[in-house]
Length: 231
Image (tube, rainbow, N blue to C red; front, side, top):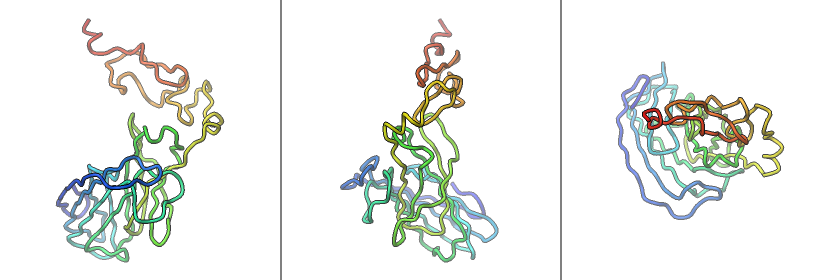
């Protein structure tokens, strides 16, 4: 799927498992996905959307019109570069043909991180890092959050090897940051008192009822399922 000035052709492929694993990497599976943008004009950004990797979309603005731009993403657990600071969720190798870094005005990369991996991490510390002679931490911001993942957006002026990282929270830090019972969801708390993080029984996949918070974890005992309603 493409948006902006150009039509986007798509070619997808999925690789097998890769050898080795970087420290803190979430899995050893290599996934390759390729998309093509027919034309990127100077007056608007063009976007390629992805489904098979942690990267969900790449939006590109150019200085001069570019045509037949192919974007190939390889997601992997390890890379032939030094490990970056902090724990690594995924390494992402982004290769672009028919578009040089010198012709990129700006590029936005949206990516998703599983909450299961973030359980002992500082969610706000997630960064996309680019390797170009050394690691460069990119400006990264939270876009949205659901029950299973958090989506982020980072900006870059070129493509190469990237790493999604986050700071690990120690047990002492978790205790210091998260104060259960103050009605403010903090750290790894699912909820805290009246702060349910916008969740309801319905958003948790049930039919209705009242979602409660007990011990800073969701209590679905007062939620109802469709089967219970029928009875």
